[in-house]
Image (cartoon, rainbow, N blue to C red):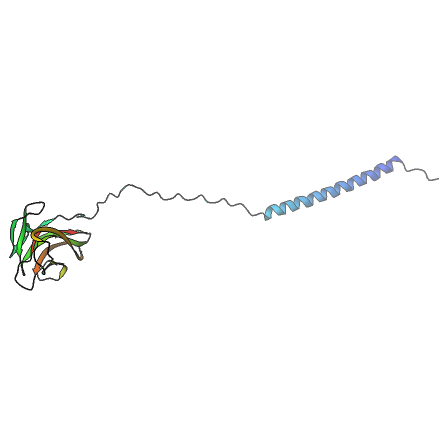
Length: 201
């Protein structure tokens, strides 16, 4: 009969199993640690998003530079112009004062040193009265013989003191000029009275 193994043999075998288990666990732990390190190195770095740049601030305050002048042109009173072949008379127009009349072919008005400024004038308001048809008023710059920058064709208003404001398109004009109003008609008859003119942007 074989005698049973001594208790020290069991202890030795148990000790070896325990050691092998610990070694295996340690090896597994190292594998897991290595795997974790590898994953950590492969993870892309988180880049902080740049802060948005501040939006430019726009001031709602009005510009300090003045607008080009003149912004509104003064009325040019006909009786204050240099007159060629034309006479002034008391007017029955709403503002009173004087108008010029007995205007016929070849007559002229001249306004000196008219400042149009930097913003072009594009129209001319003309205060007229007429009891005749035909005839025209040509607007010229710096010379009575220059090319017309606009033309008013005169039509009947209902009487020599029945006033109406007509508007004429002109070529855009800036700067300072002498303005001539030249009256043209095929015959020598008088055909219009004039109270004032005013340029318009």
